[in-house]
Image 1 (cartoon, rainbow, N blue to C red):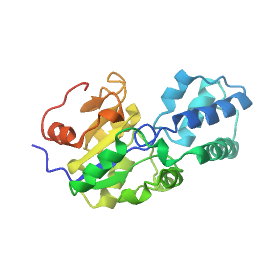
Image 2: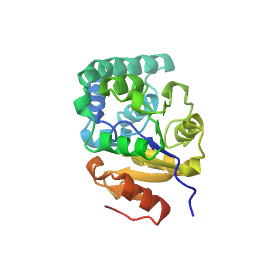
Image 3: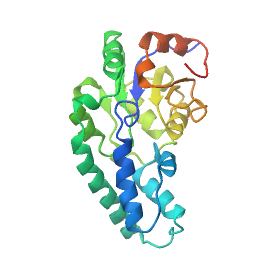
Image 4: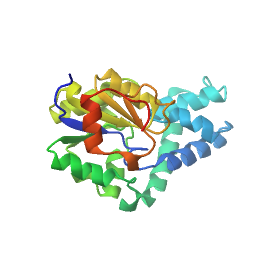
Length: 228
Protein backbone atom coordinates (compact mmCIF):
# COMPACT_ATOMS: atom_id res chain seq x y z
CA UNK A 1 0.00 0.00 0.00
CA UNK A 2 1.42 3.35 -1.01
CA UNK A 3 1.51 6.24 1.47
CA UNK A 4 -1.14 8.91 1.01
CA UNK A 5 -0.27 11.14 -1.93
CA UNK A 6 1.34 14.40 -0.84
CA UNK A 7 2.63 16.00 -4.05
CA UNK A 8 2.52 15.99 -7.83
CA UNK A 9 5.74 16.85 -9.64
CA UNK A 10 5.64 17.91 -13.28
CA UNK A 11 8.19 17.92 -16.05
CA UNK A 12 7.93 21.07 -18.19
CA UNK A 13 8.51 20.38 -21.88
CA UNK A 14 5.82 18.10 -23.27
CA UNK A 15 3.80 18.12 -20.04
CA UNK A 16 3.04 21.71 -19.02
CA UNK A 17 3.81 23.23 -22.41
CA UNK A 18 5.45 22.08 -25.62
CA UNK A 19 8.67 23.91 -26.37
CA UNK A 20 10.09 20.80 -28.08
CA UNK A 21 9.73 22.47 -31.48
CA UNK A 22 11.89 25.38 -30.33
CA UNK A 23 14.53 22.98 -28.99
CA UNK A 24 14.43 21.11 -32.30
CA UNK A 25 14.86 24.27 -34.37
CA UNK A 26 17.73 25.52 -32.21
CA UNK A 27 19.57 22.19 -32.20
CA UNK A 28 18.98 21.72 -35.92
CA UNK A 29 20.48 25.14 -36.67
CA UNK A 30 23.51 24.36 -34.52
CA UNK A 31 23.93 20.91 -36.07
CA UNK A 32 23.85 22.35 -39.57
CA UNK A 33 26.38 25.02 -38.59
CA UNK A 34 28.92 22.32 -37.64
CA UNK A 35 28.05 19.90 -40.44
CA UNK A 36 25.95 17.40 -38.51
CA UNK A 37 22.63 16.52 -40.19
CA UNK A 38 19.86 16.71 -37.60
CA UNK A 39 16.47 15.05 -37.95
CA UNK A 40 13.23 15.09 -35.97
CA UNK A 41 13.71 11.38 -35.31
CA UNK A 42 17.08 11.98 -33.66
CA UNK A 43 15.63 14.92 -31.75
CA UNK A 44 13.38 12.45 -29.91
CA UNK A 45 16.50 11.02 -28.27
CA UNK A 46 17.21 14.40 -26.68
CA UNK A 47 13.93 14.66 -24.77
CA UNK A 48 14.56 15.02 -21.06
CA UNK A 49 18.33 15.17 -21.63
CA UNK A 50 20.48 18.07 -20.38
CA UNK A 51 21.96 20.62 -22.77
CA UNK A 52 25.55 19.36 -22.57
CA UNK A 53 24.52 15.71 -22.80
CA UNK A 54 22.39 16.59 -25.83
CA UNK A 55 25.34 18.35 -27.46
CA UNK A 56 27.56 15.32 -26.85
CA UNK A 57 24.95 13.08 -28.48
CA UNK A 58 24.85 15.38 -31.52
CA UNK A 59 28.63 15.45 -31.81
CA UNK A 60 28.71 11.64 -31.56
CA UNK A 61 26.06 11.46 -34.29
CA UNK A 62 28.39 13.37 -36.59
CA UNK A 63 31.54 11.56 -35.48
CA UNK A 64 32.83 14.79 -33.96
CA UNK A 65 33.19 13.70 -30.33
CA UNK A 66 36.85 14.69 -30.27
CA UNK A 67 36.68 17.70 -32.57
CA UNK A 68 36.04 20.31 -29.88
CA UNK A 69 37.62 21.28 -26.58
CA UNK A 70 35.52 21.58 -23.45
CA UNK A 71 35.58 25.36 -23.85
CA UNK A 72 34.41 25.10 -27.46
CA UNK A 73 31.63 22.73 -26.43
CA UNK A 74 30.45 25.24 -23.85
CA UNK A 75 30.38 27.90 -26.56
CA UNK A 76 28.36 25.64 -28.89
CA UNK A 77 25.88 24.95 -26.10
CA UNK A 78 25.62 28.68 -25.44
CA UNK A 79 24.91 29.34 -29.13
CA UNK A 80 22.08 26.83 -29.05
CA UNK A 81 20.67 28.25 -25.84
CA UNK A 82 20.84 31.85 -27.06
CA UNK A 83 18.87 30.84 -30.15
CA UNK A 84 16.36 28.88 -28.03
CA UNK A 85 15.88 31.81 -25.63
CA UNK A 86 15.00 34.02 -28.59
CA UNK A 87 12.51 31.46 -29.87
CA UNK A 88 10.72 30.95 -26.52
CA UNK A 89 9.96 34.66 -26.31
CA UNK A 90 6.98 33.65 -28.45
CA UNK A 91 5.52 31.57 -25.57
CA UNK A 92 2.27 32.90 -24.07
CA UNK A 93 -0.30 31.62 -21.52
CA UNK A 94 -2.19 30.16 -24.49
CA UNK A 95 0.63 27.64 -24.86
CA UNK A 96 -0.24 25.71 -21.69
CA UNK A 97 -1.12 22.20 -22.86
CA UNK A 98 -4.77 21.01 -22.77
CA UNK A 99 -6.03 19.91 -19.37
CA UNK A 100 -3.02 21.16 -17.40
CA UNK A 101 -4.61 24.28 -15.88
CA UNK A 102 -7.58 22.20 -14.75
CA UNK A 103 -5.28 19.52 -13.30
CA UNK A 104 -3.29 22.14 -11.38
CA UNK A 105 -6.51 23.64 -10.00
CA UNK A 106 -7.70 20.21 -8.88
CA UNK A 107 -4.37 19.48 -7.19
CA UNK A 108 -4.58 22.74 -5.26
CA UNK A 109 -8.20 22.03 -4.32
CA UNK A 110 -7.12 18.64 -2.94
CA UNK A 111 -4.52 20.34 -0.74
CA UNK A 112 -1.61 18.63 -2.47
CA UNK A 113 1.73 20.27 -3.21
CA UNK A 114 2.98 20.97 -6.73
CA UNK A 115 6.55 20.96 -7.97
CA UNK A 116 8.38 21.36 -11.29
CA UNK A 117 11.38 19.17 -12.13
CA UNK A 118 12.73 20.26 -15.50
CA UNK A 119 16.33 20.01 -16.69
CA UNK A 120 15.75 23.19 -18.69
CA UNK A 121 17.78 26.09 -17.32
CA UNK A 122 15.12 28.32 -18.89
CA UNK A 123 12.28 26.79 -16.85
CA UNK A 124 11.73 29.89 -14.71
CA UNK A 125 11.47 32.15 -17.79
CA UNK A 126 9.07 29.76 -19.54
CA UNK A 127 6.89 29.45 -16.44
CA UNK A 128 6.76 33.24 -16.22
CA UNK A 129 5.70 33.44 -19.87
CA UNK A 130 2.97 30.87 -19.21
CA UNK A 131 1.93 32.84 -16.08
CA UNK A 132 2.14 29.62 -14.05
CA UNK A 133 5.11 30.27 -11.80
CA UNK A 134 2.97 31.25 -8.81
CA UNK A 135 0.87 28.10 -9.23
CA UNK A 136 3.81 25.89 -8.23
CA UNK A 137 5.07 25.48 -4.69
CA UNK A 138 8.60 24.87 -5.92
CA UNK A 139 10.62 24.84 -9.13
CA UNK A 140 13.94 23.01 -9.10
CA UNK A 141 16.81 25.14 -10.37
CA UNK A 142 18.36 22.92 -13.06
CA UNK A 143 21.61 24.89 -12.83
CA UNK A 144 22.13 23.40 -9.36
CA UNK A 145 21.50 19.79 -10.43
CA UNK A 146 24.69 17.79 -10.94
CA UNK A 147 23.19 14.72 -12.62
CA UNK A 148 20.68 15.01 -15.44
CA UNK A 149 17.79 12.66 -16.11
CA UNK A 150 17.61 9.62 -16.15
CA UNK A 151 19.36 10.12 -12.79
CA UNK A 152 16.69 10.64 -10.07
CA UNK A 153 18.43 13.67 -8.54
CA UNK A 154 16.09 16.34 -9.89
CA UNK A 155 12.91 14.58 -8.70
CA UNK A 156 14.47 13.87 -5.31
CA UNK A 157 15.41 17.55 -5.08
CA UNK A 158 11.83 18.56 -5.89
CA UNK A 159 10.52 16.34 -3.09
CA UNK A 160 13.13 17.75 -0.71
CA UNK A 161 12.16 21.33 -1.56
CA UNK A 162 8.50 20.47 -1.06
CA UNK A 163 9.29 18.81 2.26
CA UNK A 164 7.62 15.53 1.33
CA UNK A 165 8.57 11.86 1.18
CA UNK A 166 9.50 10.87 -2.42
CA UNK A 167 7.43 7.70 -1.98
CA UNK A 168 4.37 9.92 -1.49
CA UNK A 169 4.91 11.73 -4.80
CA UNK A 170 3.54 11.27 -8.30
CA UNK A 171 5.69 12.44 -11.22
CA UNK A 172 4.46 13.28 -14.72
CA UNK A 173 6.81 12.96 -17.71
CA UNK A 174 6.71 12.68 -21.50
CA UNK A 175 10.25 11.30 -21.96
CA UNK A 176 11.66 7.85 -21.24
CA UNK A 177 14.65 9.37 -19.44
CA UNK A 178 12.25 11.35 -17.25
CA UNK A 179 10.19 8.29 -16.38
CA UNK A 180 13.37 6.46 -15.39
CA UNK A 181 14.26 9.44 -13.21
CA UNK A 182 10.86 9.32 -11.47
CA UNK A 183 11.08 5.58 -10.86
CA UNK A 184 14.64 5.91 -9.59
CA UNK A 185 13.37 8.44 -7.04
CA UNK A 186 10.88 5.86 -5.78
CA UNK A 187 7.87 7.80 -7.06
CA UNK A 188 4.75 6.75 -8.97
CA UNK A 189 5.39 7.52 -12.66
CA UNK A 190 2.79 8.89 -15.05
CA UNK A 191 3.76 9.00 -18.70
CA UNK A 192 2.24 11.22 -21.39
CA UNK A 193 2.74 9.94 -24.91
CA UNK A 194 3.52 6.60 -26.52
CA UNK A 195 2.98 3.60 -24.24
CA UNK A 196 5.85 1.62 -25.76
CA UNK A 197 8.35 4.45 -25.41
CA UNK A 198 7.20 5.07 -21.84
CA UNK A 199 6.82 1.40 -20.90
CA UNK A 200 8.57 1.93 -17.56
CA UNK A 201 5.79 4.25 -16.36
CA UNK A 202 3.12 2.97 -13.97
CA UNK A 203 0.42 4.42 -16.21
CA UNK A 204 0.53 6.13 -19.61
CA UNK A 205 -1.92 8.64 -21.07
CA UNK A 206 -1.93 9.48 -24.76
CA UNK A 207 -2.17 13.23 -24.10
CA UNK A 208 -2.35 15.78 -21.29
CA UNK A 209 -6.02 16.34 -22.10
CA UNK A 210 -6.73 12.88 -20.65
CA UNK A 211 -5.10 13.55 -17.28
CA UNK A 212 -7.58 13.47 -14.41
CA UNK A 213 -6.64 13.86 -10.76
CA UNK A 214 -9.44 11.58 -9.58
CA UNK A 215 -8.25 8.85 -11.92
CA UNK A 216 -4.59 9.44 -11.01
CA UNK A 217 -5.45 9.02 -7.33
CA UNK A 218 -7.17 5.70 -8.07
CA UNK A 219 -4.18 4.48 -10.08
CA UNK A 220 -1.71 5.72 -7.47
CA UNK A 221 -3.37 3.64 -4.76
CA UNK A 222 -4.14 0.71 -7.04
CA UNK A 223 -2.36 -1.20 -9.75
CA UNK A 224 -0.64 -0.06 -12.92
CA UNK A 225 -2.16 -0.23 -16.37
CA UNK A 226 -0.47 0.14 -19.72
CA UNK A 227 -2.39 2.77 -21.64
CA UNK A 228 -5.45 4.93 -21.07
